Amino acid sequence: MSPRRTPRSVASALLALLALIGVSVLAGCSFLGDEDLPSEPLPEVEATDGAPAPLLEVYDQQLSWRECRADRECAELQVPLDYADPGGEQITLALLRVPAEDADRRIGSLVVNPGGPGVSGVTYAADADTYFGEELREVFDIVGFDPRGVAESTPVDCRTDAELDAYIGADPDPETRAELREARALFAAFGEGCLERSGDLTRHVSTEEVARDLDVLRAVLGQEKLTYFGASYGTFIGATYADLFPERVGRLVLDGAIDPTVGPVEQATVQARGFETALTAYVEDCMAEDDCYLGSDVEEGLERIRGLLDDLDAEPLPAGDDDRLLTEGRAIYGIWAPLYDESYWGLLDSAVSAALDGDGTDLLRLSDAYTSRGPSGYVNNSLEALVAVNCLDRPQGLSPREARAAAPQIEKASPTFGRVFAVGLTGCRDWPVQTGNEPGPLTARGADPILVVGTTRDPATPLVWAEALADQLTSGVLVRRDGDGHTGYRAGNECVDSAVESYLVSGDVPGGTVEC
Image 1: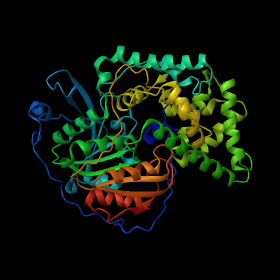
Image 2: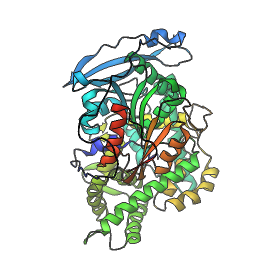
Image 3: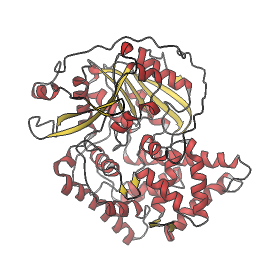
Image 4: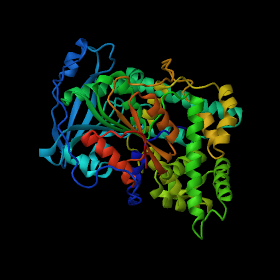
């Protein structure tokens, strides 16, 4: 199982279940207030300026924008499947643009990515009114793209819906040899399915290739330098871009950052701790109420949730009229989903309470929101892209022996989820495409200042990762938000929002770490 899922996909799926609750928190930061931020048009450039000779035709494309929904425009961009063979097979990237609301004040394009990997940037941009403040929407064209392999771009296809159901519902912490063999067979079949159904695309969905696509997009948008907002995994795309093309970095915001130097065991340990911290904060919040359904003590509450997962491992629960059962694996996804945003904790109250009473319906629905499953099947290929990109970007999975050796460290960090993270270390071991990639720092030496945002109790991308990335980048500047939930911008903290918007609109760079 992999928790590396952006908050944006979870949020959009859950919006139909619960209206977003905005909580305004004013912190002591000296940024501009509600008045219009001063802005100057960003420098423009001919698309082919600085383009490598073999890629001149790729960089010299003309986008054909068309209206595709109210006040939104769509286009397609062609890029090489393999940048080592630019004249070979081409693939298509889907684009969506929300034109600047104030044409007279327009300063350029802000390219955005919500993370994942595997989540649609087209959908993210289409929902710009939700995810981006008015100051940004007025002066920027908000441009989203589906990365290679994702959604409306040339997509990876790995499994049938029935096979994905089996993958998600499988035992997340196999204990017997038979269970371990079954888990390994599921992982192996996933990779084989990608290669059989998607062919060479499976070899070319790496983050480095996405970053190269991003430079083509920058050029065809006519921007001398890239202006970019990336959340969660989108920070890895942005940092990779900055390291490859430091001279083309304009204003980059990386919110909910991933530390590119962490190895698999450290990543699993830190991320498991992040989810445990978020779950503990949720239980503490419940205990502050007089009638918390989990009891009267935080540890007691955590043990009740752990006991529920153990019971589901032994005997899954029925989920209303759904033919699927609430398994331990699905329940974990269902618990993770609301932890991304504290305004969804009420959903977790009702879902876990019902499961403790023998009804798995609501927790299964939360799991479906996390994995992009609708009533009749999966609504996109986000899960397939998530696995394909992660297994291509990272070193091949650990052996079962290595994972067992790491398990005590990870379980200490997270008594609730630790074993799941430890087992997940073996997930890419049988991936059919061998890359040899190893973690390493991204410094982007020579780049303009880059804003990195981290949140103290972020369950998916812990604060230490943002701090590490800001240190690695030679021009990194950290914005530290004290709060819960995944990512910091537009999370009810005026200090963070002002820092991000002043930087993107006016180029105002904080003199040092910003405490929000």
